[in-house]
Length: 497
Image (cartoon, rainbow, N blue to C red):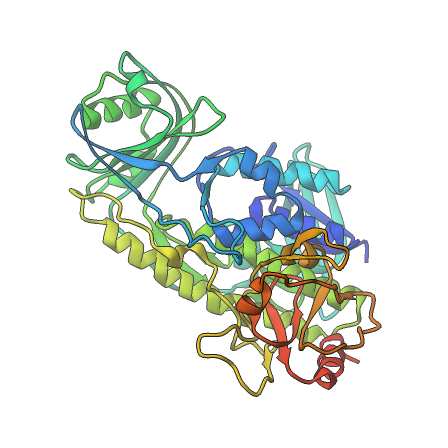
């Protein structure tokens, strides 16, 4: 094989997969037909679980420096400020959740941060390069790449991952249908990144998300560290309404902002814009032989609730370690089937959630409703997965189980240094956490670590209870048992021994 994994699409999904493969030493190529990544703000909300993923990948500090917490909403009635409210509920502050506050970062900035981190790891995106066709067989994929200068290349890869968006060329070539596809809201929406000007520009402070709901939704969201403001607006459902919204000029958008707000505002420049009808749908399957669908290529969401980008990014995080296990550890090909099984169920649940949130937002005079803790994605898990083995004899009611997200906890080293469980989990390895109270022999495999931790304040015991917990590389409990003899058979089955 010329490369082990070919990734089509360098949005957040493709970049996270490339980063995970790069740190594992997996040969890969990632191609994108754009000039230099996605230019718009589209997916802005980074949920607490996704921040944990980026922590493991080594990109969370740069991403958090590029954004800020979800601001309070300043409601307006015409030119008068009314109430201020909280749109997004943070997670409960606890030792197990290091990032309780959802973070706001425009998608173009997220792409920049992830691209830079991939380059730090020795990888790079082949921009201005389009996957134009492919054929797949039992052993791999033969793909055709075309560059902007017209030159073409044929490349052979063991696996092809489609991260090429909601209109995925790969998915359409495979003939995989989108099931349950429907318009979530017939009212067209406009999202645009603009330079806001005019005498009343100082009233749109950068510490709030400014909203009007009297004459159709208008939201103005200044972004941290940039001069741009995101404009969101909805339009009445009518014949030709979507086409009219798509044809809006900068002057048109400026008039829209001025009319709906009543403020003396103009738009000096439109950096990016998109008009659409919110839709939802999910691919019938996420795997076809050696071709895998991830992100928007596998599921499309309403933007309500900030779920789409987060679900997409976590697809890649779930897939990376499994591809590496097959390519490096000799794990059976069937391990990749668990990607489809695990992520398709999560995607279906999240699609339902985002559609419910969108429906609750559709009362025009009240605007978007408060987002609860179910949007944080901290409680999503894989209890029903074939990789989840809960073998303990007694589990406290409501206690942690195999398949659940492995929580963080402050702890210490035997030498007395402070650490967190996430410090022990960080990296491409499995982690065996011994909370039985008796010594256990560490597995001999070099892809498993068994850290020594001191739970001086009982935070680990509170979060986990007792037992042996094998933590997957993506931060979920694979095996929970009281008996050390259960570990070896689980590992042998995982690695196909």
